Length: 243
Image 1 (cartoon, rainbow, N blue to C red):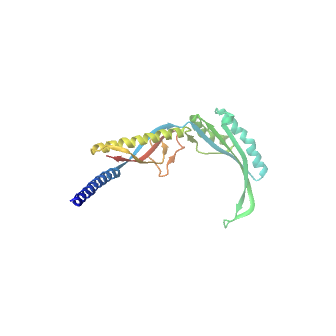
Image 2 (cartoon, rainbow, N blue to C red):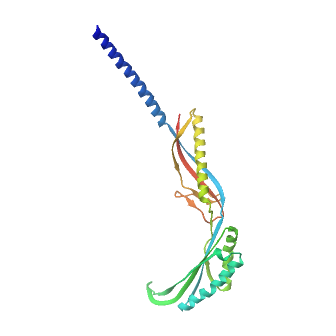
Image 3 (cartoon, rainbow, N blue to C red):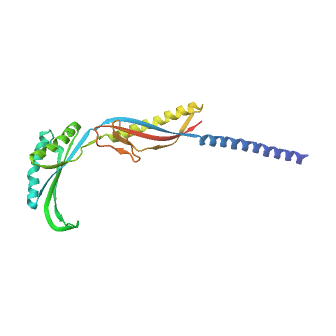
């Protein structure tokens, strides 16, 4: 009789343990199953910015059959360039002049091979103008070519327009894009009768800095320097748990 009671007690304990184990397994499985249910959305944010730094670069050059003459022409004409820049309202500390460089140009034979005969020498000197007044830089890019009328051989590059506070904007716009992703996820979850859970993962996309109202983008991101008015777009891909 005693053995029978012991057997029943042992069987009861084993049965209860099995029930508890099944319950624990069910709860863990349900929890894991819920955790596996996620929603992935893409959020974006856009901000318009105005360039606050303009850069204009140019090159003064001269050619001559005599090396010394070519060098002297550049040396004598650069003051004319500097005077012109100052007349447009640019101060000396906004203008940088680089060293004079030169090279010989050799004759090319009828068969397309370079010979040892020097035809002439070319000497050049680069200069760069920087200003926070981007409108003045834009006007300068148009007027610099007028120096040709004074007998100067001058080449100008396209002006560059930059935004110097870009790092601060990047932080805020990426935060806005992440917030937009969460808002989209909440709406989708609500439409299916679910609740949005915690963030599981997030990935920042490349930033697109383009001319205003442009729809040109790149997989590697863009950083437009050709326009004064720009727009910066950030994209965030985020995954949320749904309950």
